[in-house]
Length: 198
Length: 198
DNA sequence: TCTAAGTCGTACGTAGGTGTACGAGATAGC
DNA sequence: GCTATCTCGTACACCTACGTACGACTTAGA
Image 1: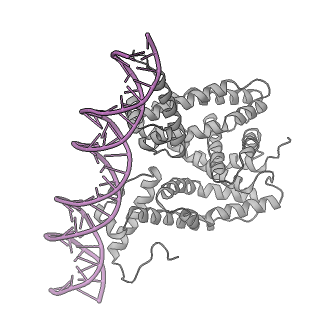
Image 2 (image 1 turned 180 degrees about the horizontal axis):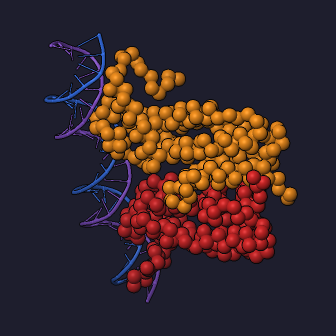
Image 3 (image 1 turned 90 degrees about the horizontal axis):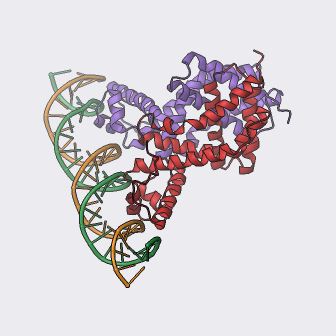
């Protein structure tokens, strides 16, 4: 139950605090690019020695978890700043525009975490992120603007995958950064609002 | 240039032929579940000793490539049996229905391959698979039933990701096998045929 | 300025995976 | 039934990554 960044008792020095922040940031970006990134690589990216990393994180899984927790925390923060009231379609568009890069980053981090963290631990941390989307979709359904002929869990999941796909296209150079919001929004809204005649 | 299953000169014995087939099949299913599957695990799954594997494939990458090539070959075979004439929407539905499991399997295999095969080698092998979808989408656009406001490469890619998402849902037990075709078809067709007012 | 805290290099032990060497035994195919 | 081919266990060398031990140096903070 204790948060990942719990301090047992001893207060940490300011430089240690800074090191930890740099290490976690490096872990996020390294693991997002390569879920198998080495502790050594992460240390290098953070500009610290490998030993310093082990001074703050006992094992690699612990570091991965910290990186994931931080990413989710930032994500949570960003998402909670988005105005989700008004027309569900526009609310969703705002949500997607401001979070696509975050979500796609997390998806690689999530993969890294699932490899090394005990079963279920990831979902435990991830919990509320998907809930927010689900709540918005639910409202849109109640308002009659979002489809109801497909399972909710599917809709949430497929949005995640579309975002992941967008990240991949950007990485491959087939889609420009400034195009993403438009493309993703149109794609997702089409998926959600279409009412097939069949 | 020689195909993966090239026989240099010496004709192989029937039991060797059988072993190879079992190894490749095991590699496909093992690597689809876990892109980091060990040679040992694959051998075990194939019901042969690890040494037998090395008797036919010099290195792990070579085995991965063989598995991928085989999966693509089977995929090619299945896809080419699908009737792609007539209404592009119905043609696409047929294509999705008969290939979703194949595509989603390949996507994990592709990940395995990209880790160990030289840059570009994967795309070289994969080539024609995506082309077929692209051709169909192009025809649908020409017929005026598929949208043209988003990049073609994006459409192809996003279909791939939707299929991947479907595979994940099935694996997680949130979507029943017999539901997949319906769900995927509706989702993809909505994406392709919707004409946003914005 | 003094000291506890933090940094980080070198060196080491361990674990797991890859690929090679050897060789005994099984079997397909003529 | 003979022989080349195939199977596959054991053993080994090698590599990479993890995590620990030690210790010298640096620096924050009172």
